[in-house]
Image (tube, rainbow, N blue to C red; front, side, top):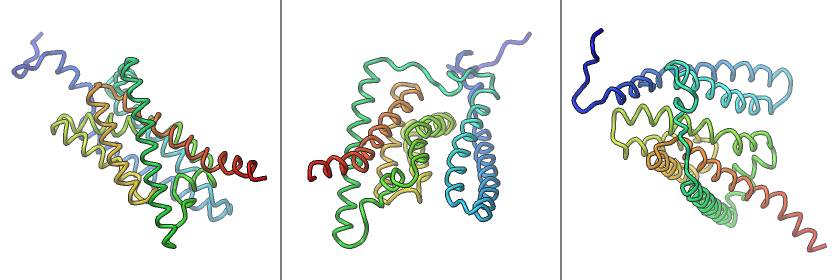
Length: 256
């Protein structure tokens, strides 16, 4: 049996690790399948929305379906296709307690800073007659669509990180250096939210995508960026819920 011919300074273990990771073609196939499935479901839900007079079915259906199909496709291209376990395919290496504490603190601080700036900009716009704080996407979501709000809190951090700091990161890191890999994955992350939020949030999400990417790079684990993303989203979610649901009721009780 012939011995594997290795490139200089490339061990057999590294070659095996390289060969059980998705490549650029896998990423293109993932994007194509995601687009086709979303288009088909969007058409079906659009028909149901028109005939059933249920305006929210489109938003609910697309949100749940996109989350479900993204996880299924990621599982195929990162795990099943290369006979990887979920931990190996998604690169869910353990994160030690010290790193976890840093992620918690950073997630809370960055979420509070982002919310404060967003609310300030919205208040300035409102004072100029150009908007309403309650129309901020996250406030609007919790007021009108609690199910989408729960997806934002509980589901999106996992599949978004496995996609952007998992699949996309793994493909890009083979072609370009870590700096550009982290930056491009952050830009793609923010562009994916285009149309769902305001202009400031798009740039802040790009910044957050870069920070999540740094966590992925420094720890070598997608689990770190997933946890970081969860802590960020949970802080935003709790802050929004308190601002919209709890604080007004508390103020009303005090004034009455």
